[in-house]
Image: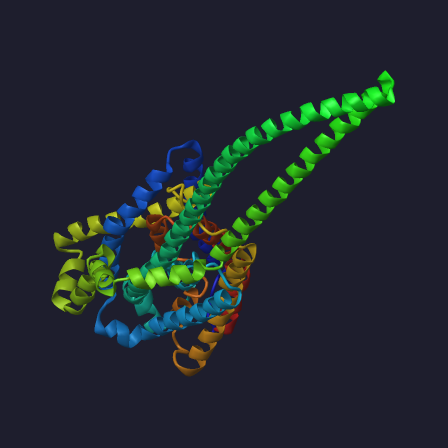
Length: 481
């Protein structure tokens, strides 16, 4: 069957959908530059996002998409997401292991790749595809009619990964950061105590030297008097001229000066040796940082307390309640029935929940302007340029082509007759990282700038690559172009 598809208008619609997100990032940067958003304000935004707006959003999307028929007909979307996450996790983990990545941003790097933005942008992509796809089959028409229901089927499972795994592992990055700060504090304390001890010893040595000098001066005075008498006798006996007398005195004075310089050199060499000993001690202390971090973490970790914190975390509560309500058909249909007064209540909450998208992108933009952390004491690991390059290549080139390969296999074996469902699976491999990761790192005050730069690079690159490389390749694969 020939399929009529206006690719030019489709790409125009995609660019129209993508540009507002880039514009929101720019607004966040501009607001930070002019001072409308302060660093403390970004932190407050992230707290509000996690505790208020995001739970509402998750509840609404999971509740309406979590029912048995959806899993039976569209479960391949979940499978696609699982494969995407496994591939990205394995690649990033191996890269971080073999390149000896700093432990302070290892899991941030992994989940920055593995968690995708399945909130609004992927819905706009699917909606555009449905609009420009002509001669749709009955299954495709059904899917396009219920995009909001079918395309959010995997929100619950990604939510579990984010708020059970990602959040706690990024907190592990933060714990390494805290331990690094403790190590630096101990280094400075050790150095300060060594300096104080050295100062005391120097003062004591100076006092001893002064006493010795006093005694030496007494003896020197006696010897000088004796020498002067002898010199005078010598000079008188040999009848030296005034010029010769001055030469003798100059030789004597030079000898005394040279002796003092040699003593100073000996003192300097001793000080250099002490400094080298102190430096080597600090070097050996640095080599113990990694072992110290691991030991401290496992000594201080309390699995039960972490699980309790997880249970009472707002997004996790919203996910569980929505998952239960989704299977109760009467309640779900009552909430989403547009003819009942309850729908007005639901629609209001839907608007409130969507605020998390705006706040997320504003946080990304403002973090492009501000420094890494609110707490000035935080050191934050310096991200390697190679990590930025690898992450960008993986996210915007390697994973999209793996997505095309996955969809090709699924098309041949399972769902050849539903192009909309195939497209929904494919866009999971090409959309940017979830802004929820930005909220998490902002609350933890760790690696904010790294996440902001990475997501911004993805948005810019994917506007070009998706529209002119990835989507045309996929559409040829499913026989549309």
